[in-house]
Length: 108
Image 1 (spheres, rainbow, N blue to C red):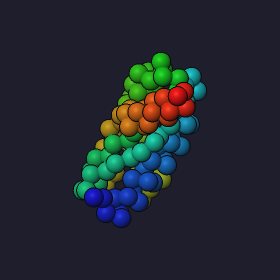
Image 2: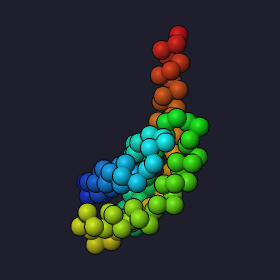
Image 3: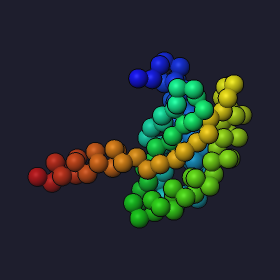
């Protein structure tokens, strides 16, 4: 279970990552930052994203991974932390599953 500090830092990272990706993306796909989890020592953060349309998912993920260093510098300028975490970026499978369930429920 994450403590309050981890939750606050994760939420700030989620918001600033969303801002960064909005500014840096080329607008061929919609990249949404859905969640962020951070290790207890605040050294590693995993950013979860969803991408629309789904056929652009791989390109968007590769783009986001290429921009991790720039993201880290952006976060360093905007959040006052002793240690800026290293970022891992992944597709949010839980959100994709939730959307699929909603779609199936709406179609029945």
